[in-house]
Amino acid sequence: MRLIRFGAVGREKPGLWQAGKIVDLRAIFPEIPDVGERFFTEGWLQRIETVNDPGQTLDVRLGCPINRPSKIICLGLNYLDHREESGFEKPQKPLLFAKTPNTLSGPFDPILLPQSCDQIDWEAELAVVIGKAGKRIAASKALDYVAGFSVMNDVSGRQAQFSDGQWFRGKSFDTFAPMGPALVTVDEIEDPANLSVTARVNGNVMQDGNSADMLFDIPTIIAFISQDITLMPGDIISTGTPSGVGIFRDPPVLLKAGDVVECEVQGIGTIRNTIISD
Image (tube, rainbow, N blue to C red):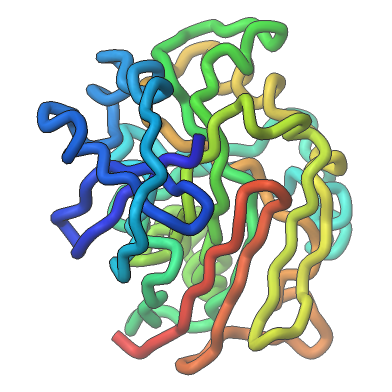
């Protein structure tokens, strides 16, 4: 299944994406909650498997497929080639940082340039959405806790990231995590450890990697995080980015108003966001 949220900002409804058409799940199940913790704990992901509706063509905005997760956990330096281009040492364990829920936006929404920071950069990433609560999850069981996958652009304000002494502010500006276009359930992805991850800026390929090149794979990441952090339904884990970001190019290539960034993950889809001045 390809689970979406559609509608105006703040008024999104859950739906399914069916070959270019939208199934309005609230028209079928008026009581269905938004796609967040309740949606998963009440078993809605399983209940909507029975839906047999071809959908309809709707000219409507798509929102982030997850509403207000309790956590957005991201991986730094999780691809060998990105670690090499950055010049940082190879991490001996997953390097975690957080983004805040205000960063989330729809797959085709604009990215706002912040006023307090420049050197804005892109990072195409495979995102994992947790489907049930768990703590101290064994790596061998980790994928049982995954609801599905999506695409995220871990937009980064490099000036703040590198000058603040920590990454929080530079990673958490409004709109700095466009995500979508859908939550693609696990059964539709044959091997999440072998998916191409691509970024294009104004049509030019900037990143061309594969999730097979992660230093720490998805089961290892989930096991590491959940040792002492309870993962909740709807939580998002963004698994890191391959080489080709803008800041480490010679000369650096940084985003400006009018640029269009596309991030694509094989089998999941493409998000496309225009940079605008706030």
